[in-house]
Image (tube, rainbow, N blue to C red; front, side, top):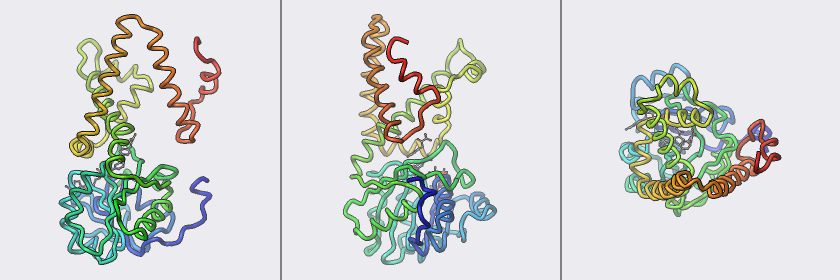
Amino acid sequence: MKPEDKRPTPMIYERVALIGLGLIASSMAHAMRRGRVAGEITGYARSAETRAVAREIGLCDRVCESAAEAAEGADLVVLCVPVGAMGAVAAEIAPALKPGATLSDVGSVKRAVIAQVSPHVPRGVHFVPAHPLAGTEYSGPRAGFATLFDNRWCILVPEGADRTAVDRLAAFWRALGANVDEMDADHHDRVLAVVSHAPHLIAYTMVGVADHLETVTDREVIKYSASGFRDFTRIAASDPTMWRDVFLTNRDATLDILGRFAEELFVLQRAIRMGDGQLLFDYFTRTRAIRRGIIEAGQDTPAPDFGRAAAAGPGE
Ligand SMILES: NC(=O)C1=CN([C@@H]2O[C@H](COP(=O)(O)OP(=O)(O)OC[C@H]3O[C@@H](n4cnc5c(N)ncnc54)[C@H](O)[C@@H]3O)[C@@H](O)[C@H]2O)C=CC1
Ligand SMILES: O=C(O)C(=O)Cc1ccc(O)cc1
């Protein structure tokens, strides 16, 4: 079912506070307004400039001068700051949290956020970590848009939190357009290391390699880049603070996947050196099946020539 086919959702929370007003928070604000998911939206950002922009574009009903002021009286408080800043922000807002409120976050890493935030969660407040698997390479309060979460996954990591609070947060994310799954924090971090964190590091590296070449100029890289490399440059334009924090906090899982990546890279490198075309062909046949699986699961759109390429089969 497409999100636009869904019937209007009832208000899920009377008051929602967004702490940090970047891409994800601003997209949440737009999506909440679209679905009338919250009665009132309050917000806080660390920089005065971001708060001014948020006021100018009417992102929230109220942009506050402190995180505690934004969180006070809210039924749902969502931490939308870089992963490395979650603990400090949680400590700041903790005394202002209303008993019975839900505290959540949108961080790309879960085990480290839980470790940072949990010690500050007051008794009677439900902490339900979350991660919407949707984003872009843009950041800041102007970057958000209402459809960002449509038909994307949001993973909740309840770790024993109150069931009613978890179900309510799941309803909230569904009302924002997302599909909801639940997962254990360690498993989440391992899955994300494979599908997001290691690929981002590889993209950063590949663009760095192109930048460091002596015999190919930056002008040529820009002029002749095909779509694969362009995708790398898009990903490598992602926010440096956010991604520094992701790698520092999901260190073990990312290093494990990168180690495996390096091993497989050596296998392919050797096959090229030895002229082992069969190994390369078999490897690429297996990886093609993964892409087909993603398209068949409705998680992506086929390229315009997909039907022709599929029909052509091996040998063309
Ligand atoms: N950008 C993406 O594609 C996605 C990001 N996330 C996660 O969402 C969170 C927010 O990311 P974005 O909205 O993309 O970031 P952003 O850079 O657009 O916004 C971050 C906000 O946090 C504030 N901030 C930064 N450092 C702070 C600190 N030390 N204390 C208080 N506030 C601080 C900034 O002023 C800004 O308002 C991150 O934890 C990230 O891992 C999750 C899914 C996708
Ligand atoms: O822009 C892209 O390609 C992304 O991969 C977006 C993204 C970035 C970080 C996340 O934790 C989830 C999604």
